[in-house]
Amino acid sequence: MTTTPQPHPQPPPAPPPSPAPAPSPSSPRASARPPTAAGPLIASEAVLKRLFREPFAARAWRELLYSLLSLPLALLGLVLVLVTVLFGVGSAGLLLMPLLALTLAADRAFGQLQRSLARALLGIDIPTPARIPRHPGLSGLLGQHLGDPAAWRTVGYLALRVPLGLLEFLFGFVWWAYGVIFMLYPLLWKLEPVHEVDAHGVPHSFGIALNGFYFDTWPRALLVVLAGALLILASPWVRRAPLAADRRLMVWLLGPTRTSLRLVHLTETREHVINEAAATLRQIERDLHDGAQARLVALGMRLSRAERGLAKGDVDKAQELLRESREETKEIIQELRELVRGIHPPVLDAGLLAALTTLAARSMIPSTVQVELARRPTAAAETMLYFAAAELLTNAAKHSGARQTAITVHDIDGAVLLTVTDNGAGGARLDSGGSGLRGLSERIRATDGTLTIASPPGGPTTVTVSLPDRSPPTPPSPPPTHPDPAQAQAQTQGRPQSNSKSHR
Image (cartoon, rainbow, N blue to C red; front, side, top):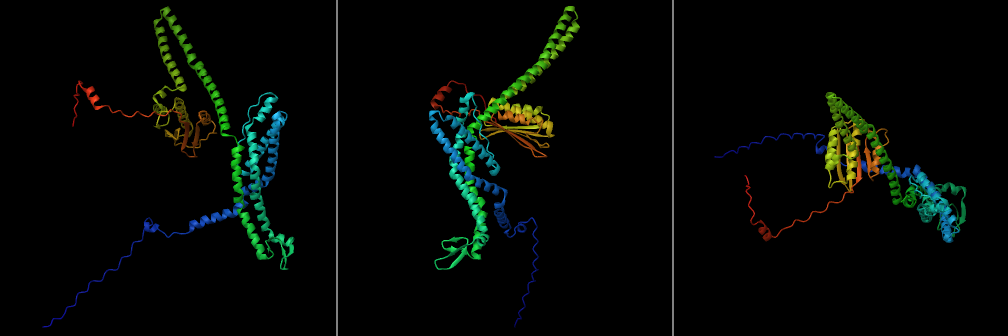
């Protein structure tokens, strides 16, 4: 019996694959796009624009004029140096000393001319060094010029500037001049050609020849033009190499020294402190005279009236006067406390955190206080920070329209920083009238501190006061001692044991 094979059932056809969902714009696949060269192309375009624009910028023309003047100024400075040295050697016998003083005055005037040129052509503002005080008489005049360190430093600058001025003239002006000549070579070649026959008997009509190679054809002339264009395009950067050295030299030798700036700063701050102290004393005297003193006089008169009332037997009137005198005494004491608080707040004895917290509690604007200090500042620094915070809070309440202020104090890199921030309208400046910030800045400057303001229109306003941290370093804690166990056991013998127990 044969069996017919049954056909196997065919599996159902697979459904067609569903299309993949389109990636959302926020998916990583959608954000991943093939990199383009737009960024490097834009950067290269900017570099090319600057390359072609820089030789014709106003700065390049000013530096070109300065380089042109460098050689004659260097030669004039060399003459002054030689004359100063000559008179300096000859003044050993005191005969040429007046001429030496006159020459040093000319050296100082030349330094002022150099500073003016640097300010006008190079954009460098170098302050003029202060003169030393002059004593009366001819000897004082001679001493003022002969002992002027700025004049002698100018002599050193003029001596060093002779080779530097030559480099500035060569790389700053001559380089550019050759570029212009090369750019105009076809015109010069046709207007004033040079005729010459080479060693092979071939005549040439050219403008420039280099080791027997004559630029007497238009392709070769265009090569010269191309070289001139490259020289002109590179001239600003080539010129600025010696100018950078000259800038550093002028700041170093023609400007005031750090010691002289410090001396001027100390003189100004000393004068400000003296004036501030005199004004404070006058204010205290006026407050005492118009306030407590007048009220004490009135108190004495009231007590005299009470005394006369008691003598006459008018006890009720005397008691009323005594009650008024007692209330007046309390008010006078409170007024004197406010006056003392303006000189030195007693709350500062408890530390800066407690003082600023009290100050913030009395402020008309809600304020937060945060103090993070590794060690306590000096008393002078604490007083300055307290009064600075008080004035800044008052300023914010009067002018900013702020609804919240924050006071932060922390130390960093040898300085104590006070930061007062408010969410007001902004626009605060040191030169704004009526803000009091300028006077506060002067008082802080007298302690070698600084005041900076960041107050864009619309706010917020952040005022930072930085004072040098002159507090003595915290002495290291002594290492823990480990007593001898036998000695510790001997010391504890005979002592009653503790009755404390641990509760679980």
